[in-house]
Length: 330
Image (cartoon, rainbow, N blue to C red):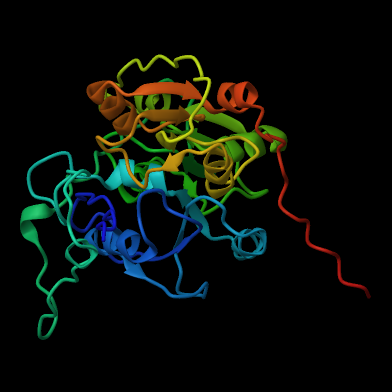
């Protein structure tokens, strides 16, 4: 009997999410729900089992239910895309919580999801893994830029900062950080890879935006260089994917990840749970993560765009909207 492919281990910074109560909704590519939860626990988070008043952050995977999304918006909870959050808390080297990054290693699922051993009494703070202190904001001398009195939303990954330290910089500059996109937001600070749906809502609401690096420059802060990303050229779509092992990377417009996966499987493809040496074709959507692109380039895997592939193979590719909530009769 073939071994079940284990979820990819993700090394994360210890205490990057310390004190944050989180719930995950939707499907996480390459992870089971329990292994995804363990990744966040390794970063210091507390995982909530249901959407309740303790939740501080909702981590979004693919195909999150429309009713759940409506409730999240109604409660005004902060949301983060899984890929964005992992990009922010991933350990680049040195001390890290969790296992290594080798996605090809055949481990039993129990090994990947091993829980930390319980300790008696209160856990001692890990002084070796303290985050760098928040840079002090220099007051703007030009007099034409200030965050004083403004409600600010940060979206996307901020190179060199977790969300808490980025928010602390905004607050020290006089701004009030919003937990979600709402009518009170005056300014949206854009990091790398902001979600396309969020960008569309920002544009629709007509809210002013500013790149994080531009804001940092105006405040006299040192900007952390962004990761170098490999230039992965999108190849032509193959005539057939029957029998090929494929994986989707990035956001597929008009489709959930599971819906797009089923379309490829209907054409005879075998869908991989993670990017590994068995993958023969990477189907690219929008905003594929830099780490994933670098690995695709390193492994030399063939690529094509989702749109080109479904067109060439004649697969059903109509965009579908989530069902709208019916208004209650008075």
